Amino acid sequence: MGGKVRWAFWILAATVAFAVMTWLYPGTSQRPSAPPDSPTFDATGLKTDLSGRAQVIDGDSVYVGGVEVRLYGVDAPEARQTCATDGVRWPCGRQATRALRQLIEGRVLACAERDRDNYGRVVAVCRLEGADVNAWLVENGWAIAYRRHARAYVGAESVAQAAKRGIWRGDFVAPWDWRQAEARSVAANNRPQRRASGVPQTSTPAEQRGRCNIKGNISYNSGRRL
Image (cartoon, rainbow, N blue to C red; front, side, top):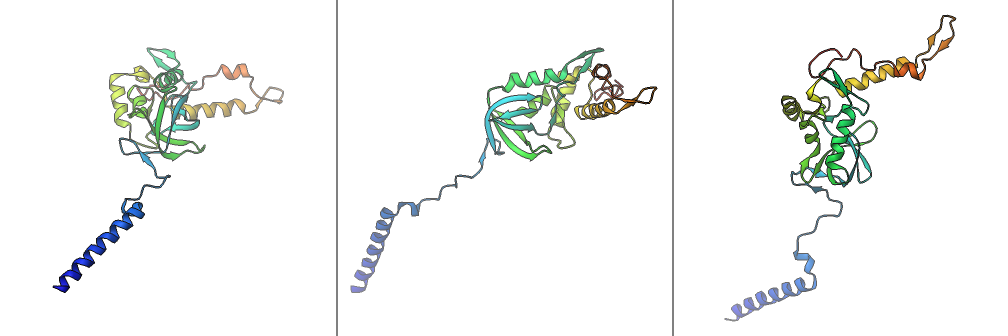
């Protein structure tokens, strides 16, 4: 009988000791909280590295909370680039910038970093209220899938092409080809030329403006030479 009493006593003592420890040190029985620098995740499961109000730079670049972000997997017409519809040229680069500005300017974006480009900019997928801004640009024909870096938006590009949205209404040069042609044109314009007297001379600004920067490029849409 005495053994049972002692056994009950030790059980009671252990219970009391546990209760006292829990009361004195309540944190020991709780799950530890995440460290303050743990990454946050948006509703799609992508790591959200940056958020803030948007300020549009051009058709595929934006400041988010003061940080310059290049939108991942898409390439929009450059600011000075033009496209052609039924033989009439129009400023598709400015239109692409305007479309992006109307969508996101001053609104809060949540961006998931995917890379850094050669200029040190954050390359990211950005979302507005959960919607993929990069995909929106491509689906509405204001950018094309940047296949050299990603194929995430190839399907969205097919949708825009089939519906003839944005730049798909006519002919346009792929933005990466336009940039290469522009670089070649600048290099040619800056190359010293020689008069009949043999004195080197660079072309004047007026002469440079008169040259066509994309002549000879191939339309990304139709394959026609522009």
